Length: 163
Image (cartoon, rainbow, N blue to C red; front, side, top):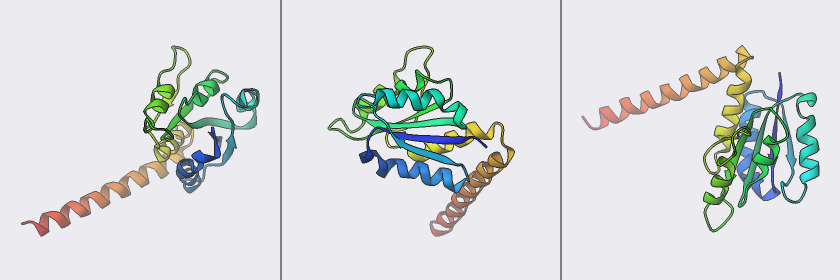
């Protein structure tokens, strides 16, 4: 199975990014975790990204706040799927990061999740890998079925309570 690389622009992003790492590990997906900055370590970020496919990476998750150019810088150097997580890290509450991550030029796509949406970033990466991995697809379906069942149980409880 291909790995997922989780890259953050700063170690201050780790408190959000840990949700992605945990979710990937819960599904049995191998991960590589790195800190690269689009602005402070552009050469290292490019070198990692350019060799990612050869190193067994199937999807890259890139998390950054403020100017948040990391996902775009990574996407510019690979044809692997890139998922951006805008991080709430400024007075603008993450809107700046969201706009920087989602507004990519034609030809350099970045899938973007919600501000601080690390769990969904991991689940999207898993869905991408599940296109070729039936066991991952089964795990995803099982998790959705479980969540559905919990909602139906809560619905029943609330219906009985307010009859």
